[in-house]
Amino acid sequence: MQAKFSEKQRAITSGQTIALYIQDELV
Image (tube, rainbow, N blue to C red):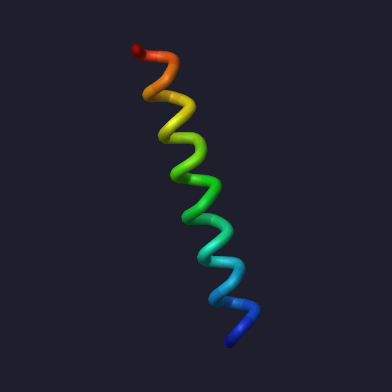
């Protein structure tokens, strides 16, 4: 369960990083 949680959190973090990168490119 702990590993699943960290894996999910890592996916969310990378998703936020990509979103910020895309926002930066649009601006």
